Image 1 (cartoon, rainbow, N blue to C red):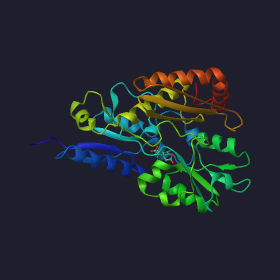
Image 2 (tube, rainbow, N blue to C red):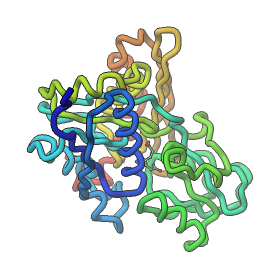
Image 3 (cartoon, rainbow, N blue to C red):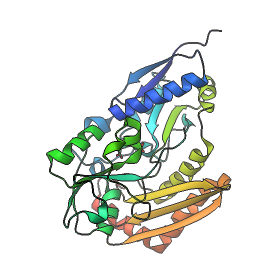
Image 4 (cartoon, protein in one colour):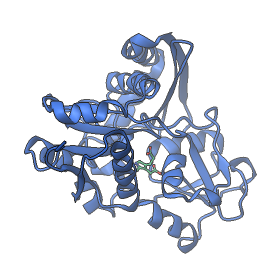
Length: 316
Ligand SMILES: NCc1[nH]cc(CCC(=O)O)c1CC(=O)O
């Protein structure tokens, strides 16, 4: 039976992005024998500007926008994103057709001397350009010197040596996907560091009205992942956070309930608001919303306002 024309898959060109895209394609081929796929590489503004901290880049969707435009213009049929890069509001013409099963959402430490965070020497130099990682590190160890570290995973791993750092923090998921888990010194527990919303999961974006692709993707959707990420994204939307604010969150589904934990920190890690909430798994968005509202009321609003004053250009 003819299966129609090849499906054009949009992907960023980084090693991690292409690995994720190739993995999605191989899974889809298993689920849909005979369907052909072609990769079209698309560079995003986040790929082009690598010398500015993400938190200063401003705007939303710096790693997704060009792919979304290509989807809407029908230059590609699906786009594979890291869920944490997808803005909380997606175009009304597009939808997340599938969220494959999440891999470990934790952050990890790779340290030069292979020690854990707690055993790093005083004033250790740690590389990360994420405000969320920086704030939670300083909350644990105010003595750390946080050094800005951008670029793709390969570049960041090289900078550990080249920039004479004591350690770097990256997402476990990225390392799992490119097969670099051998260098991990510590999988940082959630009590110390909550991950970025969506970290560890992929979002496959498609045109809402594209029934053929919708059907091809449907078997790849993992319901627990979708529910957990929905709770996290609802929280983030309510807090109106992006890369400019240190917000961490993690949700999981247990016995038909979604359990959500979240943190809002000041940039220096001196004040943190941490809270958790749970509710029926089929009301994930409400769970996220309710937790966000409670955190805003308990001082989160004040912290977020202070932070926005530091980033006047990006945040209205
Ligand atoms: N910030 C960039 C980014 N976007 C997605 C991942 C990989 C982790 C994931 O898939 O959630 C990474 C690397 C990192 O944060 O170290």
